[in-house]
Length: 247
Image 1 (cartoon, rainbow, N blue to C red):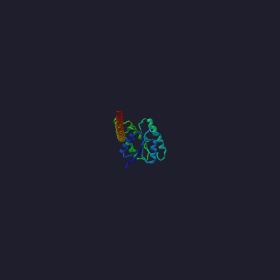
Image 2: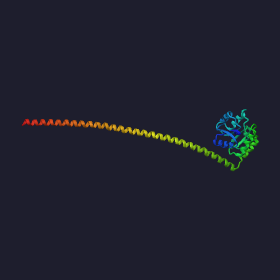
Image 3: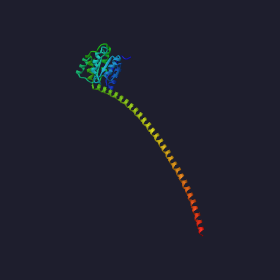
Image 4: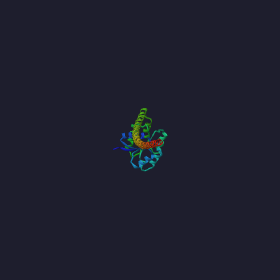
């Protein structure tokens, strides 16, 4: 069973996945949402031991959501960390003034983050000392180039996995479109086939009709020729009779 349950509020799916993996190594379960409004809804539906809250969010920003949490008697006891790329001293002071437990940088040091979480979970009923958390946050912000590079590589790894999934979905969509296109082509081929067959049958009918008409016309000509021959015989006979009478 997990030692605690954390809520991650960040509109970047990559940032949510990276932090969730770090929390999982600390034996913490987590739930991620993309907006402060969704986060506040989840806080009222489920029980959370920690909240990691991004500052720049669509709709309500991180500080506005923090004020709502600290103004709610049922939620104010939950430690809230501003999980953001902003690292100015003035920002951290304002976050502490508004009730944040501290500020955690996006390029987070795993070991330092785990130590901070361990200190909080040791006494989950009490708010952590902002000075101690800020000290850890300063170390996180000032981590070495190697640590930053490791964080960026982890980000690239997650981005690669997301891109791979998107490519897989795209291939599936293309395969579906190709299948639909093939079905359409088969349907068109069948339509053309039947259309061609119908044309052939129609042409054969026309040829048969004209052949019958030609046969009837030929019979008519033969009958006319026969009648003409009879008339010629009759005329010839009349001519012979006239010549005999003259003799």
